[in-house]
Length: 192
Image (cartoon, rainbow, N blue to C red; front, side, top):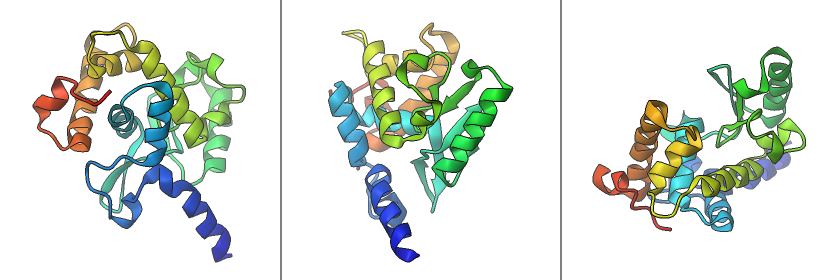
């Protein structure tokens, strides 16, 4: 019985990094974020900060992105297991329009991003979700703009006050991830 649990924990450890055992400094970015960011050509620090903003939860005193997070009509819900999140996602799709449901680490909107998945529960696969989030970031990036401006468009392509508020939240996480003052993160000084 303990062997399957240990096997599952080893599978998700690269996603959460060493956060669960408390050995990761504020600047360490889990390998799964590095990999997704590299494939999409976006800064891993920005992708990680975005995931902290979208799906962050406190675990053992640390804020970590949580892969089985749903937001249904503005109400966030977190699940201990992927299968429970998938069942809740299917139920939510019967109750509210898909444009009111976000899923996973990057809180991918099921309605507006329908072209990015075949089956909704795919978005609860953390690696798939990160790949989609990184692709959206890349698509929203305009040469010459900072990555924080891009993050605002990730949240709300039309911009405005909601995008600005969102950028501020991601900026706080980015400053912690980079280990810099708010000024460095404010300028969007994330490595390319």
